[in-house]
Image (cartoon, rainbow, N blue to C red; front, side, top):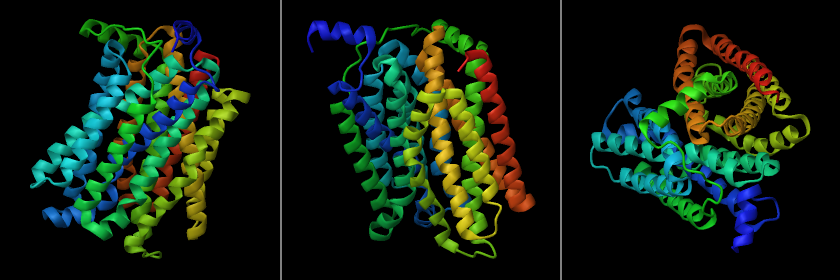
Length: 406
């Protein structure tokens, strides 16, 4: 890149038509795919893992929950560290490290060894989501940011879908350990793709790497009402989404459906959401982030309501609507957080990390609450939890619009 072009990029950011812009979009899409694939692939493998290590079904869920918990905690630190040392190196180390740990987990000789490796993998996985949004905000021209962010979120949707649908056939062929090793290999290939495609930062400005600077950035983020509202939107929508998916698997195993292991087919609705980030991005360009996010929340509520129907086709349509709407809202709100932080002078990596911490905390807390409501009150209880969270998200978006004029 010539010095003139470097100066131009530093001033304005990459635009559609620039070769580097396409490399960024598709490199981060691979990264998002690998990140969510590596995090969630164990979910369909839990029965095999439980049998292989002779643990109970409830104990086996620790291989997923432990990774989610360590990832959420690491998000508090990775974003601020990237504000100090740079974005690209964190993303590269994150994906390669998680791939290596995932492959090692496939050969763990003991249950405790597997848990340790999955916990470390969660820490490694925190690097990409905490940094990708900040990198996009800095390197891509503001007029093209929505589209680039949507492509990245589309990659996470593909990873979420692959993480639920791919391990089953691989498990049937090679057992859970072989499936885990294969998923680790795919993650490594995606990491290599990101390493080759994503160019070094041109607009990154190093900021507050010391503890005082990190605390200051955290305080600035938490004192901004728009950013706080947007983080809570992430927690509420993710909680409603994950909670309904968790409880629906139990519902479809019970009467009158009695699908047994076939209940995992609910995850076939996940790919419906792959196109949602791009669609939401296009709508936001025309109408603004706030109105587009409110429309997504309305669709979320409609999808949840449709799952109240007893007919299986209606339930699947409702689940598809829920998935499409959730991924669209997540794409809009996550990009909104980075944009808001950039405009008010808060560390973008720190703000993105706090958003994702709320996002995964919502998944853990409200996902468990929905399962409890299923046991206590049946499906109406699950709908009550999800609907309350979605309505709360709509009110929080209105609050964020008030303070940010989006």
